[in-house]
Length: 319
Image (cartoon, rainbow, N blue to C red; front, side, top):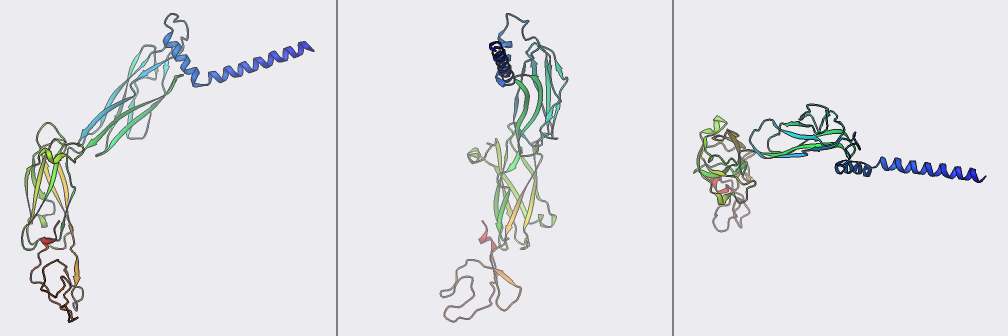
């Protein structure tokens, strides 16, 4: 009876030890212990001969790119620093816009290869193009390699839209828009400024002057050069206009052309009493004593007038 109990206890102990060993082998701690042992054991190379290790470039930052950059690429180094054959899976890009070239799937000890990642960034974006590769390394079962950067227009308007309240009827209206460049090689030059719609082009003229560095303080990223476009709008422009597009050319190869909008706000209007479907702009003007501005009602009488101003200067409402 005593021998039976002894055998049963021995079997139970063996089962517990086996279960504990299996748990330890299945944990990440065993993987780290295996790698550390392989890296530190230089005196006995016969140990752990089948354990591969990997050293690789995890990320590369392209920094700020300007204009239409096309496809960008980088070669990432990957070395098997272990004693076994390093096996790699087929690369898995994060989406279809990222491509990866892996020259071989099995890497011998002390062998180095280069993994090429390519990506075509969109305009005005920060990107992180990553690829995942599975391995047979206990401590690095999965490799993630990333190509990062950001794209800015080489030339861009600080204010994409210039708003004008109404249209000028009696005198030329002037406003301004700043155009900046991030390119460091040469000062920004602008040419062939014009309104794209030919029916409105004759009412606009443009002049450019330098934008000095003190005007760059609130612009991010900091530009290297800039120009100020003075826009003159001549009288006669139709008062139902909503938007025109201004286009120009630059001397910067990354952005040879640029655009910005001029939007027109409709001024506040007033229905003319007794005249259906006809409205006139409401303007803040000086009125004789006893008459409220923009109402057309004589004080004290309660009667309404239908007088229309002989001249309407909408420039007074421009921002």
